[in-house]
Image (cartoon, rainbow, N blue to C red):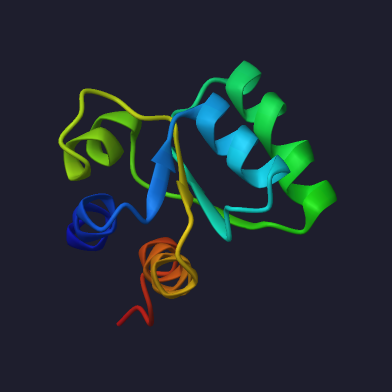
Length: 103
């Protein structure tokens, strides 16, 4: 979440489904984080475009937690426009999805 706050302050991301779609179409977004509770309608607007453009994406956190990381109310999608932030955000999202070895 700290990484998203830093990326927001550095103007390295866009927020929301529409802004993210626009950024992907314009070739400005390198990776997308989708909230785990994004509505199926919003997901259907975005995921096919991401797949068609080859834009990497991950599902993590909730809309509320994504929004909190950015100092907003709720956010369903975050498009990362900086390659370094995008790479690191995807690494962290993968770590959240994989809890690691179980004892």
